[in-house]
Image 1 (cartoon, rainbow, N blue to C red):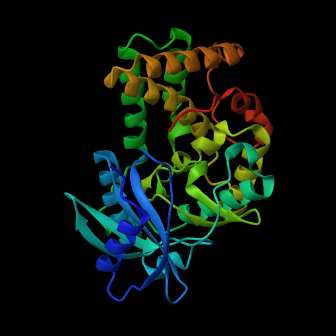
Image 2: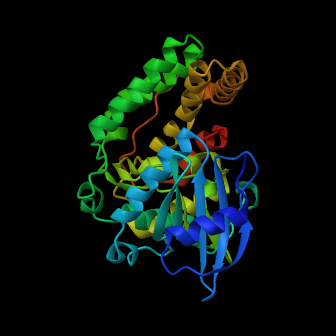
Length: 328
């Protein structure tokens, strides 16, 4: 049974010493992964309390908390947006309620996203990637080299291939991409690791905050940009151009890898379906892979060419237009 916003408000006063709640309203949808409420303190400040309802949500919240603690005040000052601050916690029914400072802004659906907001998102991601890796390493969070990242990609391909459901032409495309060594030569950076359009809060077409830090690690910067490869050509152009203005073109294969990783999310979705024995998910993944084959058929007999010159968005236009939107 879902906890009411009044119950959550009472929990928050136990979690945060001196918190005087004068208002509370539920947030999120019924049956979601969390019971959550936005709270108003007597001083006018706002807070959010969340209690996980599933084991997965509990694990994500724990990882999120570790990541937020790694982002010190000095680190946050380098970011052009607000990161929530942990305020307190209290045990409840075998799990724990977490209270954090509320970050202002609204989520914008991908289909309603403006070019200005896409550019702001590109700048926000670039700022994360510019953080010193010691921020993550010193906190004991994962760190993956380019070689380890490629091995993980190949392992994902092999697991998907073992299902016997990946079209041969698509599997050949992915294998050719994995064999192009130049594509996978990159300098690992700090990455959020779990970004999607739902991760960003904004106001007036500018990013005001970012939520969900449970995937924080050092790894392939393309990980944070793969969802943009499925966002539509114009939005992707705006985001990648803004990212490049901040970070430069030191990683000339970034957009190619982002496109590959976006396609491989379909393989991940397929594996989720087989592991949970969901015929609905499996059928959905198979349809998505068939769509990729149909739309990139003209490229299937040609390897993905590594880039040796500056990034040219027109070179990847066809590939990005063919990339489907995938479930996270």
